[in-house]
Amino acid sequence: MKRIAIVCSLAAVLFSSCKKEECEIPVQPESIKTPTAINITSFTLFGFNALKIDGEHWDSATNLPDPFIEFYNDESLVYKSDVISSANSQAIYELNTPTVGVLPVSLPASSYGTIVLLDSDGINVFEEMARIVIQARYLYNSDNATSFENVEVFGNNGLSMRLSGNFIY
Image (cartoon, rainbow, N blue to C red):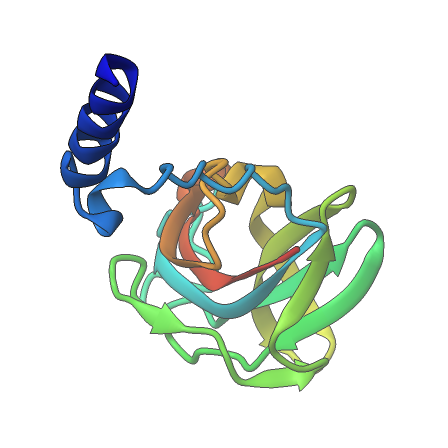
């Protein structure tokens, strides 16, 4: 009889010790995923050197450069922006109007993307101002994020850009 009383007492304590929502087993965080690709939805230029590496002006002392970008997936040109006329090197410019390709630009995780900033000096006449090489892993923080906003990337000759887009899993 004592055994039955002890078992009943223990059962009562167990069933009354917590509410259902307090006693559920905690859910383990989902495992960290690795993106298979990124989609870049926005290119923003926010800095470049006003002068060439040799100290010369891009166009002339009174004529500012006319930059645009080309984006390469490995060696293939997949995007080219419209030209920004007479750009100030310290101003901010959205380079999201394509003349080649469309946005978003997809970059597989195993590939390298190259952003080349060029100065247009006329029809089919241009010179390279700077470049940035990126890879999807440079933009990913192992946090299962679905997107990235205004991530700053930097290249040679003072090139500064912000990229926005999303991760593909």
